[in-house]
Length: 152
Image (cartoon, rainbow, N blue to C red; front, side, top):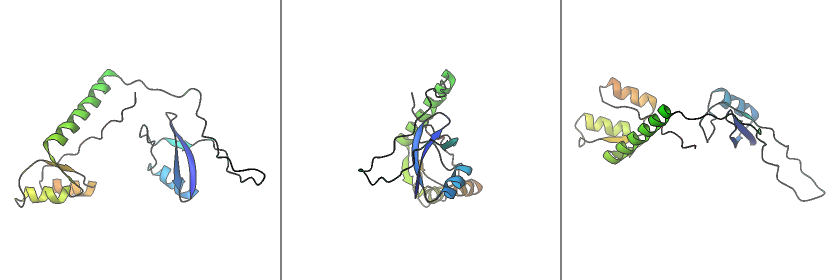
């Protein structure tokens, strides 16, 4: 396993473990590595001090990655703030007025649609393929936009 200190385009520092350097390159190339703070896939390796074992004194952990003194910053506009609040309100409404069925969403939606289960509003998780299949069957479903990350 290899631990890399990473930094995103917004200068958020974080670390990730990978089975190999090739695995890191593959995952970053496919957009699978995201900043846990802002969600961007624009990440790269931060400057790291190598871990070298010393025999003349107890080991000392490597220092944290140094971030640039000036990092790019983006101000959230008022229209974007309103959209974020609307998404949060939508999630709150769905959560309060429907039953959470978790990973069983597609199965439960079919049961309701075909009259095998009580009609009610539900929410949960479905893969993209499951959601497409539900739509192709004429089952009325809609994805929820992801909740915005609170950052300021």
